[in-house]
Length: 301
Image 1 (cartoon, rainbow, N blue to C red):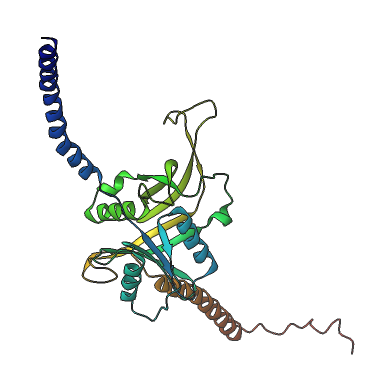
Image 2 (tube, rainbow, N blue to C red; image 1 turned 45 degrees about the horizontal axis):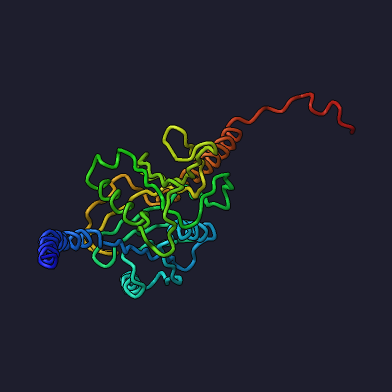
């Protein structure tokens, strides 16, 4: 009789446990689906390279960009006379999906090509007002490899080409989560401001008071670290380093044109001075003063 009761109790326990097993089996596909949703990994890598003939200040700016982008890869200098399509092949070999190409011209002008490889788009900038970290010597300091908070001006949402600029900058400067060279926290802010037709780049350290355990917008302060640069957009191409032009800046004036106008203005000043001297000589020749009778009074005979 006791054995029959124990067997009945065992069957009842099995009957009670069976729905639980069924629930676990039903929950397994949901967990797998959730893992698949979270399995996306940002594998963004940025190739950074320059051209031959780049100046020391431009080279230091490129080094500052590399230190700000822990997911970047550096390559050797590229010959300026070679086809820019070679950069896509180098990016493919390095496994990079974005490219920052610093092009120097006449050892004076610096252009920045920001491209998505291999399909585009590409944005060409003229780099102005360059100030490197070593040159500024500011008090701000943040850990190398930490993830930045990207801050964009509200003016980026006003026009279609500025929206494209915002997305391009976010993909290039946004450090991917889980990268092996990235520290898993935020301690600096990359600010992009659109003013005077340029994108002004600033880097700030987030300083939390010592008596506060957590960062709060009401108690943190920003201390500038550097570098500083102003990027004036020139053209936006559909492809990578070429293709149809999506946007052409009508207000852009090439640096060569600016230098020629300055030389013409300086030459105009010199020409006016020469003309004034010639006019003075003609006036003196046309209006000769008569000889005075007392000019020889104090001269010895």
